[in-house]
Length: 201
Image (cartoon, rainbow, N blue to C red; front, top):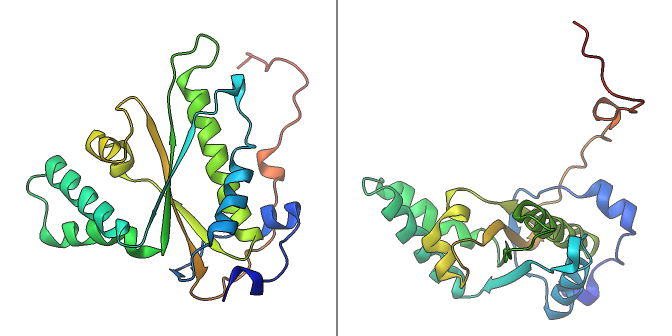
């Protein structure tokens, strides 16, 4: 199925409230036009100070196998006694989808914008990618794990040690139709603040 054959994009609220992480992803991956739209959505994420800290590293084709080697080598350094089965599982991770976008925050020393806010901005950009992918008829899921915090992995991806990988975003076409989740009730997570909480016991 090509991008042109996909259903019309979902509206924003429908995309936000119906997105789910698919059980599996297969080709086709988002094409160049779809990726461009996803990244255009990503860079409209909230961004204190307009630092634009996000970086998007696209890994597809044979580069996924190379990334698998990087992940495996890093795991072997972290755990010299790691089992062969765990190494094989690590090597296969980038092959779970036809395309992977590594979303990172390029951290800057800024008096008014601490690193956590730059990381949150990159996280918001990652979320925009996932929602845009869903709106365009693709599927995606977000993964981190120890590799996201590994200095060796960061260097291999052209990042500095102080930079933050906020997620490996796997993109493709859902292998099976996802069952819709029941409507989420936000009420348990919402409070209306009217003043300082009482300190009485």
